[in-house]
Length: 527
Image 1 (cartoon, helix red, strand yellow):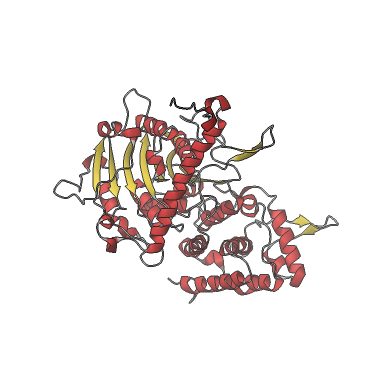
Image 2 (cartoon, rainbow, N blue to C red):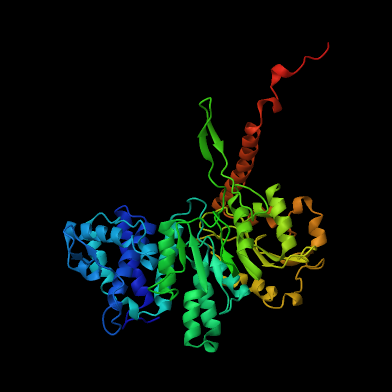
């Protein structure tokens, strides 16, 4: 694809990534590099928009020096400096811009210069960013380059607080069956870098542009999507990603930053939720008892609009997502396996969700597709319905893309084409016309339905549904690669350890009279 003159996406991408490698050798992680690139790229684009032919008011406000005189922190002020003076000025500018409101405040919140070498900073400014006229690049080009950087950065950092970068093929398949429309209001309450929202926005533009006038397109750009992201570092990447895709504007951003989605009930309801909430449990609080012992107390979320109180993040997000939806609103949510079978609060939440929503589709995702290996996840699709006595869920359709499927990040990465059959049998807008591919004559069919009455009889309303014969049980040649297998084992052991830890913590919280006193309390047998 050609951009400016003879410059292509590939050429720009190669230059951007070559600088990333050099910075990595100097101790700057890929994610930190993308963050610094975000600051510089925004300043450069703001400078371009202030010049002919655009001549817009500058997005970068002036600060003041130690004597109270105006001090520019714009792109031209960086080009005019060198050495330590450049570093100090850039660092001060980041701090100043982080105090602003709107898009500036989100992108530069708590920003700091992590490029400690002034010579390296100058080369990034002059040799990489300044040589391109970025506003002349199409939205597709800018978005493609930036998302490629985000993807590579995610591949480098596979761990971290249960946050997972959702592979693009999954997002595309989810959006393809959800088919958002211009009149929708879409939120991702755990937005990460904004992948779901950029794909949803692009889908609306690609499929409805001919039916929209200029005002419609402006409204869609400003009102279609909302992102909420707790971590400021991630939120700034999300804000920049949306901005580069033409979402929001210079005067506003749809990103809510620095506030947990789970803290309070939502004030605004939406017609669609697309999300991959963080996996894991909320961190335990450490307290000191009167005896001086260190005690762990689970940080349980308690909300009046929740069906159950739990420390399980994904169960809490599932309840929150239900409350985000308008009646008639639709959701597609990536969830780990334990949400399908966990007892206690998990069972209660599944019961209420199936009563108050039409939980109509479950996609079992293959392993080996997330950047963190061993993750076992699904996509749950449901629609919120008005209150009534009878459960709204009549049947659940399950597509098994996991059994006998082996993907890895390097050797056999998942593609959008791997979801083609799922998208086809899903029948968006015509769920009543669905037909199973599974039958007694075709036991390996991946598309099967379960009636609600069948599911209600299962222990704990277990939705961990599978039926295809696993070839690895009989044929060792069908086993996944050793690294994938090892990661799956570790994931299973960690899940088990979490459950044992929860039981142990619960037992410790019981009064001492209610616990067994050990061997001393056992009466001797009569001889």
